[in-house]
Amino acid sequence: ELFEDLNNMVISKLLLALVVLFGTCSTVTAFAAQGLARNTEGATFFPSNRLSPTTWALHQSSDPSPLDNMSEERKRNLFQSLLRDLQIEGVPLLGCDANQVHTMSAALWTTMSELSENDDEQRACLVLEDIPIGALQAFVDDFLVLKTQGRLMANLKEMSRISVSLVGKGVGPALLIETTSRTEEEKAEKNARAAAVGNPDEGKCTSAVKHFVDRMVIKEETCPYTKTPDIAGVGLEAKGITPSAVAYRFSATTDACGALSAFWNSICELIATPEDQLSTTLLSLPGIGSGQSAEAHSRFVAVVEIIGRYLCLYRGDGMFGLVHFHPAYERNLIEPKSSAAYGHLPPQNWLRPMLKESGNLNEAENFADEQFDHSNYQRRSPHTVVNILRVSQLNAATGPLSIFDLDLGDGKTEKASGLVTYTRNAIRLGNIDKAALDAAVDAEVAMAK
Image 1 (tube, rainbow, N blue to C red):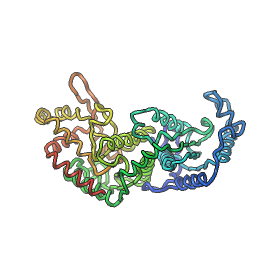
Image 2: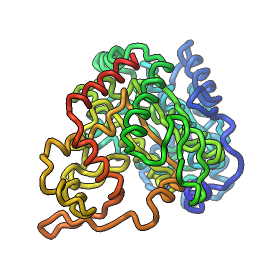
Image 3: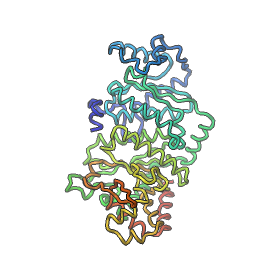
Image 4: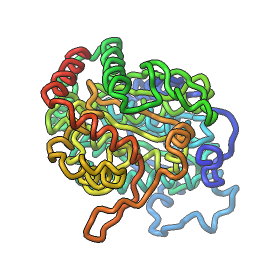
């Protein structure tokens, strides 16, 4: 329902003509790049007091709702005046025919990525005439909140120089995206990210991920519905699922906005492609949290958290599920540590109670804590990978009764799911020698280089 009506706000028309699938450049990107090129060729950004008197008055108004008593015609005229003022200031106006949340998100994050990659002060205006103001306001409000959250922003430093606002306080359907000039410290942080990953090769990265899928997912049977690295949904035919292709997608970006752009372009591809032709997507992001250090893991955790956050912002989790992978994956280092986290394994301190719930009393009583650590290896891929799953297939695999009340002891209960899969994997991986698991991960990390 999310992508069909956006809470009765988004009108279903055409898919975004500006976004090209497979996470490659879109027309939006091209327009943005052209606009940025114009700005770097000598255009001057005039201060806001060069705006027209009406526009200046609107921006300076202390009234939180200056548009409430304005007629629709007056709003339209004011909106056009604001756009003209932005053009005078040298701000590129990017027209976008997105009319659904996934195409809007792809266009927005692609534009933000283009600006984020540039070290200079930049501005761009994204005009989204078929998107309701309320949907745009939701993004602006959440992005403002994100920038106040120190836990995340400590690992999303490039986002601190980006701001997004509604043009004219929402007088029309347009977003103004602005970046400040990168400081020397910010340039050093950007260069360090690039140096950490080097120049990743798509072919090598994809081969390494396929090797991981074959080793961990198929041979260790951590997912019973994947029998080859290229086909998923096997064994669900009786529940109406046709086995179909696994898409391997790749982006070399080291920028968080670039990762969001690649993610939303992958979402667009999945929505545009029938399920019997494309089952699921594995998106490789080797430049996000590159390496196996604690810092790399923290970066990975922050970026995939905002990927899930902006999918859930418009209830996209009703259509897609996410599974996150990293070569140093450690559930005990992911917040919230004792509660469910979207796209991640259940908290490690849930595994023993889950074994009891599933009737595996011997393992529940006798497994050492170190053996439960081995569960992390089902998520230790050669580099950061985001698996995008169709909820229709998740429901077919787990059934409507997969959520249950898990007794954690001391009178505490939590809603949990995936009992059969996670307990089976905990037992299987807990009985494999840690050195062998480490060696396999290291070999696949080397394979991707």
